[in-house]
Image (cartoon, rainbow, N blue to C red):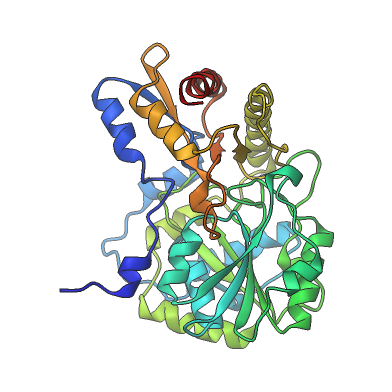
Length: 398
């Protein structure tokens, strides 16, 4: 029996595919520092955990397909703090940000249509595109200039009659790149001129450093019909297991279509929505403290990478990732070698090979993504192992 073409084409996660090597090392008693996945070690807010413990309904019933009214109202309050002014009908709660992106691609594209996305990009966009039967058109960016967006003419050169949208992640995963207001407005201008949507993944909105301010696609004037915001609580509240996200747009026709997709999957998780809603009124000090912590971690990792001769890496200004171009041929082989062979005091480290974050074949082979999601002590140990391991790998592998 044959499987579907989707099943054959969907990409295995480069973030998780090397886990068998990590698991084998752990079975040998080796401690593995995981810098490969964006799972923060910061505690989930107590108010969120309390909401789980306090839930005492006798029946866990279906909720509304668009999400609980109380949570959508809470989200309007949350967004207003960020100068994004929407009402409940302009928000549909989703099962994490992943579903929000699948919904967005599904409602704006027909089978075989194209969506432009700067590469390297969040690797699961590949899987979402396969699910929606659409094609991602990569817009290549480079480590040497901090993965900045190229000129407008290079972006427009990728637009064809089947192009339907531009997909952005701001701040970026895996690069940590933050697009300025000027850059977002430039993308919006191109999109409007060519009648395209902009799908803006803003999961890392709060994680912006060095005095920068996040600029949302929803901040662009007179762009309401083209703008689609997708979001998630996973990183903001260190609640990756809650699986609560949303899609936001002022385009009424689009949101009617999204609701039909939402109805087809019935409803998002009820208890997790209530838990997420408990975080809406968190004091600013909560996120300020987390931001300061991540900035310290970023600086630590970046400083360690700067000590590596031949490493190309511009300091990222957002999210909690760094992509580094290393003086080696194959980052995946290096990571496997770390997990199989290299030990410091019976400890080793795991990162994510960056090749899987590109759509263009052959790019990113000598790059990897580091997620600085560990506490300072563990991160210091991990980066020491990483640097000494890389030096040994270069010595023995040429």
